[in-house]
Length: 216
Image 1 (cartoon, rainbow, N blue to C red):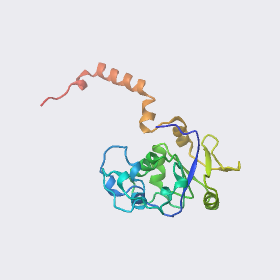
Image 2: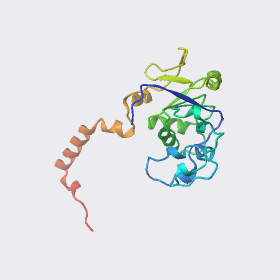
Image 3: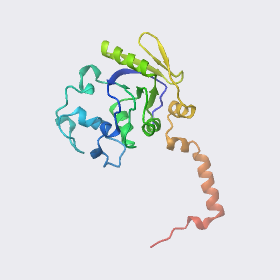
Image 4: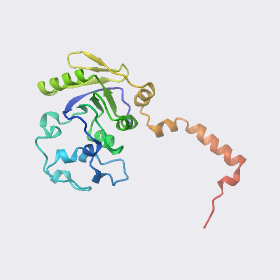
């Protein structure tokens, strides 16, 4: 996955509490076994006026003009500002896939559902927890200033506002290490590829019968 070091991006406000994973990516889109192609259906029931189905061309659908991500001022947003308990509901990993594939690199909220929070880190996205009062002020500033951008500095663990004010946030050391280096679970394992190959070679040399396959 892509490394996360410092990211500066346009902020989109999702001014709803308890946004669940079925709203983030509705259940009918979970049939695919691929880990790609979910971005066009992010918040599908809110973004469009019709019901979406897998394989449907989103360009032919009618968008909901009142939904925040359809508003011109938030096009290209890569930081999502949310309210409390974001990502609640079922544990589907498709939710962070859809957010990341839509273009979001970071989310800022007062709290998250635990499984969704963990899944974000595993998929290269940084969920930041800030006090509710700070999040509320950010909502006010995003509404007041079109083109509002924030800088997320993971190494220093701060969110930098346009006026230079820094908002510190906490992140567990191991998760920070993985994001800074772009390691998902597979990437972590592949760091030891040489040792794994050496172990397999030794095992075959000392126990060659393990290499035999049953036929039929």
